[in-house]
Image (cartoon, rainbow over all chains, first blue to last red; front, side, top):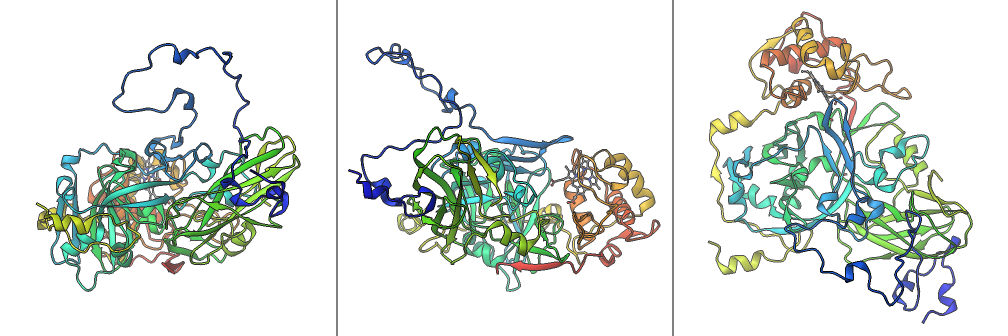
Amino acid sequence: MVRQTDLQPVAGGGLLDRRLFLKRGLSFSVAVALAPETLASASDNERLAWMQKPGEPFSNYGQPSPHERKTIRWTMGNSMAPGNGVSWAPLQDMEGIITPSGLHFERHHNGVPQIDPDKHQLLIHGLVNKPLVFDMATLQRYPMQSCYAFVECGGNSNAGWREEPIQTAVGYFHGMASCSEWTGVPLRIILDEAKLKGRAKWMVAEGADAAVMNISIPMEKALDDCLLAIYQNGERIRPENGYPLRLIVPGWEGVLNVKWLRRLHITNRPVMARNETAKYTELMPSGKSRQFTFVMDAKSLITSPSFGHKLDNKGLYQVSGLAWSGRGRISKVEISADGGQTWAEAQLQEPVLPKCFTRFRIPWQWNGKKMILKSRAIDETGYVQPERDALIMRRGRYGYFHYNAIVSWEISPEGSVSHVFA
Amino acid sequence: MFSRSLMLCFCFCLCHGVQTEKSGPNLGRAASEDLIKNWNIDVFPDGEGLPAGNGNAVTGKRVYEAHCLSCHGVDGEGSSADELAGARHSLTDNPPDKTIGTYWPYATTVFDFTRRAMPLNAPGSLSHDQLYAVTAYLLYLNGIIKETDIINAETLPKVEMPNREGFIQIGTE
């Protein structure tokens, strides 16, 4: 039973105790994206159409319900080169922490290669005593393990640097981040087999796509927790996510997680590729640029309610969102419903894994007035997600990459949600 | 074949977790010199990896007009694809102008990237002479070398880029 005292706010704007979810007898309103459709018109004792005849037969590969056709990646390709661009994961339509493989965001420099796995090989050479080649069948015989990790593009959320808040669904603002169970061979095993030389300090990873994308990674990270991933969410990695082999570099910039991996060049210095000099570096107001900004710092965002959702009436709502940090576990997510004056701790859904999406929730009693919702992530290293002003003070507005400021949603008295800088 | 005890000790460890196994079944094949030579296209700032061949901006202009202009615009000023030259502002202006001339720290990267990825609609289609020539043209358009300067494995690493000292390496801080 819920007592009246349970509904006492724990912070301004109507935020309630996060443990309220565990109590029974409480019903929540859900923010909806669309006007509610007319309910099935059948009276209570009549069978609905799909209960009056046998259903569809089996299918070889299941598809989402036709009613979920709007839950898709938004894509943006170059006019002269449709395979150059990005697609965003629809975070506003998703729950939990795993991104379905078909909705995982994409960044391709020159399209998705259609790789025949029987012709795919991985070469390791450079500062090793034994240069080696592996085909996929051989790699399949190695001991595997799973890694639950987010992959986030260094350019995710870059609309945040603009002067005006962008009014678009949260997925099309922050959806160049996704989270999967990646399964494959720990990179360290293969590096050990090749026998690194003493001067081996960097590893240049290269993909087998038309852009032959390459990038340098410090050896310390390569030997720490990198994975040669063959499976994503239980099935072979999708072509657009690196089939048949992807390097997973947990917690670090998406561009380092080289797709279609075919070569690892062990070196004593970085190669200074285009994607670690001209791009994926952040120009600061001083005119100097930050380079090798590998770690994706802590970020959080409320996915419900968020832009495009509509609150029907005042009352109890569940605020739900995602938080993650490239430095480790999320230790706390705080929510404010009064524009950042007071904060309440959200409930973190188990499991809370390092370098992985973490789902947070908190009950909230909306009084029907205009207010501003914010979330703030704190990770196990003590790093606190910054306010936008503080981030811009440090970095200026032209760094483009690594925008991780607190996101603010304004709820209007009519219940619509807009993005604000507050 | 894996022995059962080997399998047991490999099971159930997450990548962020407890213990990671140290060794595998050692099934990698020795990579031949030829394979490495054919696959290794990395070019380093000191010139390691640069192939034989040469070119200058005069011939490079022709390569550019035939193979690059359609996406990067006249004189590299940008079109459907990135601006490559002709910066009108500096890096400290609002907004700044990032081109090869104002931003790129190493000239070798121009050759490396063009060889591996450009032209976007036919990557890998240019000869080494064409690649040196178009690299020379892009450096010339950015006011970094003269039109007749010969660019090759010797001269390219010596080209001094204006923003060579513009980067602060953050690493894993």
